[in-house]
Length: 511
Image 1 (tube, rainbow, N blue to C red):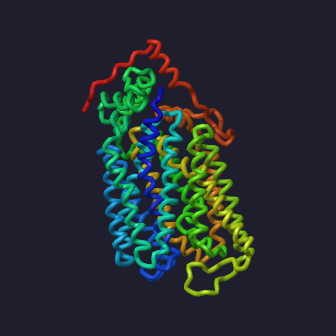
Image 2 (image 1 turned 180 degrees about the vertical axis):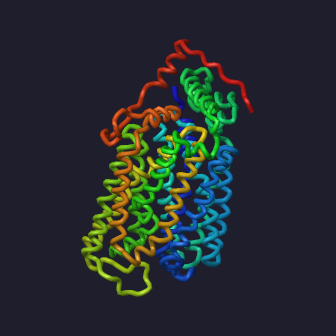
Image 3 (image 1 turned 60 degrees about the horizontal axis):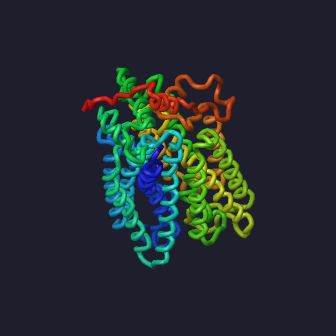
């Protein structure tokens, strides 16, 4: 019997590392509308504010490019711990910053942490999770990110009533707390069994699987031995590949489709429009004519948390493919609606030197409709692309290149995130409502790409992904909504072991 409590506990605790992304998002979005921040940093607008916001993403791109190699060499766990140290340093620099330059430096240092944790936490989660609930386990990080956004936002909101620099310094310092907790807790976590296998530490593989899958650490449990057997067979095949564990293998004919698909899913997740809704919701609501910006913004952060919960519970039943397809359709509709309402009822902002140049005035019903549409857009992302984009990129590639592939996907995510963080304030000032039609069009393009290129992977073991991508369904993906169907191959293997038809002999350590 699978020891679910152990896996759930590890994954939930590990997700604190992803909550840091949420803390960062709110640490910026929560101060944009406060006079304390504007007065101290000289009311940064346009590209200047974009650079401050985007500094974290820039640091993330750099570290994500090295996350795969570091994770393969030092293990997922140790590399994550190194990233957490960087986060604490970044929090200190931000909370003590004496100007824009020091603030940018602190956010860039924190970004170095995010590049490592965002790459390796989903990898680690996918490698410890039973295949039937892998989507749920990896989706914990999406819930943690949403909760990080909400908790930090309310901390920022509460501190906004402090009439001093402490209004932003205190929340930025508090960001270090979850990193410290996770850093200490990781010392009691097991290493990834699949990483151990890649290092030839087979006795530890068996012990860790028994710890994760059984209540009494039974190394002779049929399901433990079946998973051990699958990992062993996969590693043996990888060792026969002369290109195995090399950079070239990422772009070999058998692998590159999966690598590019993971990168594309991460890029599309940023181009859905969620970036502007998270970082710059204060600006959007100001355009809509909403007055209590900080309190109104909190509604979408609460919805972000609530709508992530159904995804965690049922993503392994719904499947990855339907979630992605339905999600972008919904987001496209609501973004087009926001753009249309702003165009029809908006007018130029008469106040100079403001981040918003186009706004709705004296149309309360329209203002409420835009607020509701932005909340539904966020909810649509939270129940679909939020958890699935991180799950999918980590499960579609084989062990020998998983850390590197996820690192490339994560770097792609943060590269686009950086571009958007820098230029969205500029777009809001220059093309205003047209920007929402632009991101709605990106959602349409994402729908088409997923429809023709992304197969279903739910309830398949990580070792079965070769079967999906190299042999695949007999008909094109666009002729089927869910495309592939899970097999009971793993259960049959466990049954053969239980009945004595197959004997598994654990390998001797090779390192």
